[in-house]
Image (cartoon, rainbow, N blue to C red; front, side, top):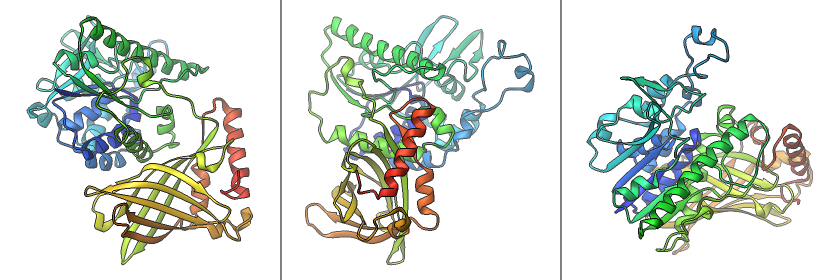
Length: 448
């Protein structure tokens, strides 16, 4: 029996849509799906019949502002010490769930076993509620993080997010007989201890989540359970929810990252899975880096082509150390294709993005090249507006697509405006990353 355990992570679980798409590409199916906290959304979509391709599409249509909805004015007038929460879950119920295609009737009728983790604060129990008995308010309650969203009060019980008890219910998967568990983990788990109330609030979540996971491992070991664990996780911690709210990262960028990270694991996995200890979800903080996006458009044979790239460029190394995620749209291919194995290669003459795509069982190699010839300074960056994209079949070598794409009007300004510091903390360090990146940009992208 194979279980899919979808951990929480707030709005960052848009990343999980890219993961699910990659898992389905490889033909993986699951007998049991479990969701906790934000992972409830991914579990709800899957059990509603939304596939990985549709998940990615639907996340692009979600308005991040819908995650928060205001309380009645009288609640705010009680003062901060009596405020029940910052907001309520009405936006999640009325707008986010429909936008994501979450359909409770379909969930209740799905033959695949599903469980949704919700804490009954009255008894302090974390209950894995079966998909046949779940309803939308309970699902929303399972995502109602204390302090931020009000709990659900029903029939003398108070229902809220399970995050302080567990954020990934591997024990439930094993209880149901799973001998293979796929854990999709997007909660941060790095050794960095940050200052300030937000970072330390997140640290508490990380400790609760990782501690409960390790307790599940210890219990299974004590029971002599034999099972295989696969873990899909980011290499570096994902951006926190405030960055999503403030537009510093988009759902599409997170989806791109999820697909890239899943393909990295899928393409290197073994039948034995991973070791069941703290290392299985461990991440490392990236070096001081700048994250930016490129949005390139063009046409070929009258059909529009769009290439979106999310790049994390370290400032103390070569451009070749950059991490790249992305996606490309081309009408004849029907669905948006996501980039795996993304990387940057540079020479004195050119700067190029490389990656792989999967289309109808074929592996395609993508190269997007920007010429650097005769473009020595910042004043000639307008000449770098375009890239030449070549997509070829890895086996046959046949060209699948050749097109020149452009950033377009205001494209460079949008690229610069998308820059966000990564791997640093505090206002001064963030400002220094932006300064250093702009200085590097002025010397040309091929300059270290």
